[in-house]
Length: 274
Length: 231
View 1 (cartoon, each protein chain N blue to C red):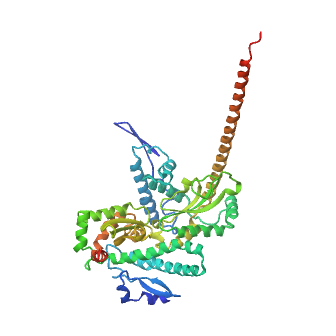
View 2 (cartoon, rainbow over the protein chains, first blue to last red; view 1 turned 90 degrees about the vertical axis):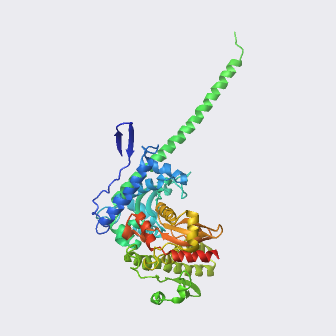
View 3 (cartoon, rainbow over the protein chains, first blue to last red; view 1 turned 180 degrees about the vertical axis):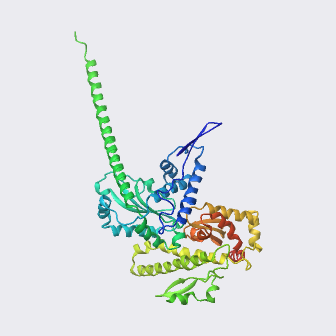
């Protein structure tokens, strides 16, 4: 974010910036063309940024982080006009970072362990991601996410979280859908809006998805995101425990105070002995 | 394959309004791809030949193929009394069936310039437009605005509402046919705002596609549908 101090009426505005992909626009050739990046990043993604800046300048939303903007404009499902732009900015940044030149191959380490645990094997995960991406009618995204302490229903929190509940899941979302609003931790995404693949693949979305999985995915980034997701889940668990303990402590402190009060009453009720 | 015979010209089909053609598979009435009423390059330079090829022979044909597949599966499931599968197939039927319905209307909504494309409406429809929207220009502005504002994939329609007896501008998402919005809406003309409809030519500049498409709009067809739906 940039801060501009304007002369005249003192006005500080924080403008959201168009973040470039972590590689040059032609670096993903021949799997994703420079032309696609020029339009997809240079026009579509840029337009979301410009439009959102127009929408928030001078309002209380100006100054917020992108994640906060998404959550506020999601408005518990009754989305506000800023949501589409904010969510799409986040989604696209996440998408560029999910790819790398010379990507593809297989995941390893802890990520691979979890994939085997939750999907059976790597091929099964690929199959499920491809299926989600192909079957998302119209525009949208397919995701690999880490789900911790959350039930399978929207915002619902699991009242009795267990280790087995912390799972990798494949999810699809329409249009600007961003599973941050469900507090899942996203690990990987593929954009299946037609503008993501039409120049290179025309109607052949299935081929695009295959090339994405085989040649573009950065499993290193996915592994890193998984580490962060686990750390976040652990931190949240510690906070929950801390809060529970504080509540319990607060309750017992209160009852001791009552007993003391009663004792002093008894003392006072006794006639002063001489 | 049988496909080639299906794609050959069929005059009976053309007289059935939307060009719906009926085939038979195990007693089921399946659908087949209607012919374009003009050549693939006939709408140049407004809509390129490349787009028309892909749009008709890939996108629309895929909807037809997948609808027929879903229909066969539905038939089997219904025969077995397999309610779960019957329900599960609904979204596929709606999406692919809707895709076929919408695109069949769309090809008739367009015409080459010189064959009526771009000529303004006449007769009762023209009168209704002026009465309700003040002018054709204002109606077009409204349709374009709705199209531009639509997030994701969908359609913008000029419709006749049989219940209210008036015209309406409506949008539908994905391939939902207009009838899913309100049963009494009759589509007069639709504009496909899925990215596949314009991307290769107009890229991200949807607004330019929207302002240009009126040059090949077949208002005569819209007028005929309007007249029929009011009788």
